[in-house]
Image 1 (cartoon, one colour):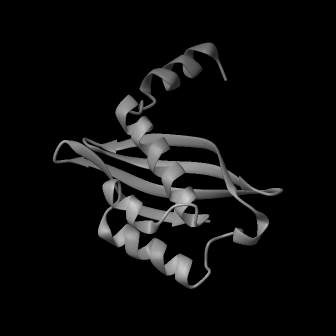
Image 2 (cartoon, rainbow, N blue to C red):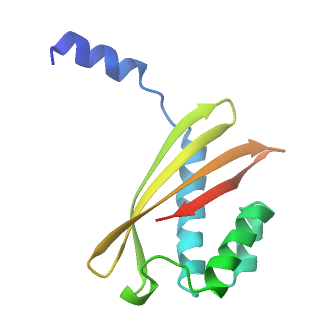
Length: 122
């Protein structure tokens, strides 16, 4: 790829908001701690919408947390891509034992705060 093309791509790449990035990292860490049963689900109320809480409760009660038998989850990377004004897509990788797993979600800014409005663990 030529330098001119590479430079043009880099300038046009959307940048994530520092506040969205910080919120996403905090929310993902909290989700993983809840998935590991190190924190109660209700502690997610401050960062997540009720539908997300219900989905996490279902995963926990039905033992559907990916790789839960492999040990504690360790967050390795969080990426945030702005979607539109006041919203962003979140992608994160985490380790459980020897396996690398992923999660995806969406955060939205409303009423002067960020909220986790969608979540999927893989």
